[in-house]
Length: 350
Image 1 (cartoon, rainbow, N blue to C red):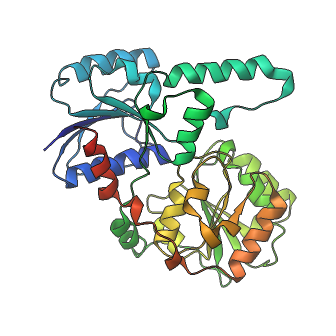
Image 2 (image 1 turned 30 degrees about the vertical axis):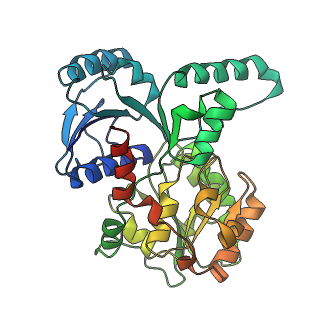
């Protein structure tokens, strides 16, 4: 039996948080002791059963670093492995065997306008410092390639371990009773925070041009971009076909009953919603963003990957997916099973 420490910024409803919580539960299910340090206190997600959650209740990075050093120091000699989901706290963790998980392609955040060459160079240098001399877990091969090729990380210090998924739980939850959209022509669903990186506006414009004018679009999530997305739907005259669902603790029943799940993000790591949709039998269309989608949608499914920001191609892919989609049994997603992923982390304890 091993003792694992994990550090998470919050329990808010987002992908990184879901990944760490799923991993925590899988480690406990394998018989290991898990301490989960949470910087900002409780949020949308519930604590995983069997996981010892320690809330630091920090309001600033300075306070967080101080509390991490103090609280983790008490148990430092007990941990076989300590994982942080945020590199900026790596040096504050007083544990010898520690590692940082990277959940999104780092340089995907950097824009490259010629007029801001020095600003771009500075941001890249800061990222190099951020990940220098650290042991890193990349959630996809695309993330590792970015770390090694663009940020000069040593190839041997970066290991690829994918997102963990509790497939049995996901499938059971997708069958639970609950509110779903009642529409004779069905609906398309996008489960994502309403933030710029998720590029909801591309979907709104593409959705306005698809052939099926009776199907609806359900946006599951919350965020600061809601007003601009609503305004776009109104300007295109499709406000009656776009449903702002808000946060939902169980999005799986919505995915299960959708005709199509979409992802229009400009940057990811290994998008959870793609794997979750496929696991419960729902077709998906995604942007070919850095990184992850092309590692999930392989072979004939690559026809449903579209360039980021290409609204015409997104419209085409949605139309095609609604009319004819490959047999999902052709995809292998078992490699993402939570217990299989958790075992890879246990190997790092040696």
